[in-house]
Image (tube, rainbow, N blue to C red; front, side, top):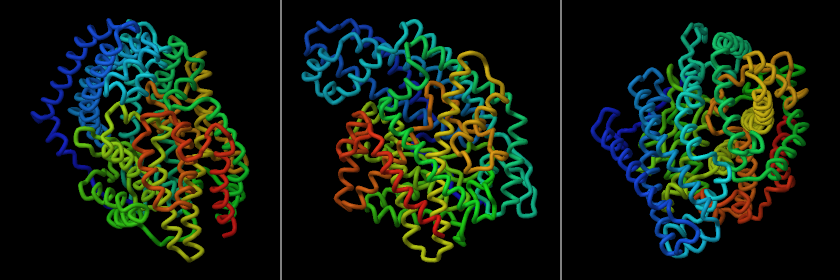
Length: 600
């Protein structure tokens, strides 16, 4: 069902893509790049033997210049992206994005040069120099991380070439996938009326209350993907092929290695979490089997996974969703409630479903105005209310950093921790719904929403991890056809879902529309979601014990996620993420919800 929803307002950032303000910002960005180039030629002559005070000044000015540069790019890029993601037919926006990306190659090269230079200094020299400069001291974590990651750089010439070629390589394939999937429509009969339905809206039919509609949506979706599968397979091969070549040249151990560093975790942490996830599958299979029983089946088909259960009798208008979220955020923290109200009141959210708009949901910070913007595809379901809360959590995470006056470099948060606030906010809303309902059918509906989300983030994410891992392993030997990708996807789903689903009706085309697989230079955009769910679940349990006194420490954590490794931040709450126990304990909390669900 389509429910009236808002479009976002970007006019306080720049009046338009054609405005003089936007053009001035572009010129300023280009000038800053050129000035940085000149500065860096002199600065990079310093080495570990340079007098600490002089080196500290150079390091301090370097991070100050990068912060100014990133503030500009993290304003211009989201502004352009706001048009590209909501209207893939907008040729002016596409052109502006391409031109900006061309300029940003210089920024990427400068960043690489800086990383290589810092790597030659060594941590001891950085530590001494940082004591002499406030800016360098404030960014010592970023400087040490840059030095550490410099081990995985190619030669300067190779890094420059890679940055330039990715625009017509992996990055171009990623954009093509976004364009193809956002412009694809299907003529579909709904409520007695045939309408041209964009793929995000068709995918949302997975939560339609009528099974016949869900099944027809699943079948129509598969027919549509069949028509574009080879194009999307080429996109996948392009992105993964580029990544494999660059990872090998940079000395990475395997495809997972770079993602671990970007996530600021180690293999022990990932292995502990994956092990706990796999151990939890019998628990989730109980949920799947009980849901199948309630539906009147022996096993669930793919189109049943997100089927609503019980009765909420509720389709939320956008205004109702807004009020409910703000009210319950306020109970957690008045500051969080006021923040949500500000986001709604100032039209930070583009929630309307329409052709040409990308599917899914995301949040992006806009640095110059210190605000966020949220994309969603709102359909009035409880699931979409949770999605709005989730994305507002990301926005609040940004807000905590803005309030703490964190610089751009200090805000560079890994995905593992970037999901903390989003899942916390989603939990606040779903738990609030659960507290308010008393009718068993309404309780079932809310628990279903919780369990469906948890199963997607634990079970389905595990299948996506297996899928991507095998894709990388096989792509190293040869290109993969669309049928190859379908086969890998189906086997990964069987390994994760097992007897929980009817293996005759899985979703082999799951790889086509997930943009996470097509992000050049950012692989395994999957397990961080599980990290976020289970880490936030553990934090929520602490909040339930501590109450209001938890909030200041939580806000401080959010503000600091760009300045420490995940394990060190978790230590502040007495959490050891390198042991399976922590992850198992968080999964046990979800297990109690499964128990309650299976009693209904």
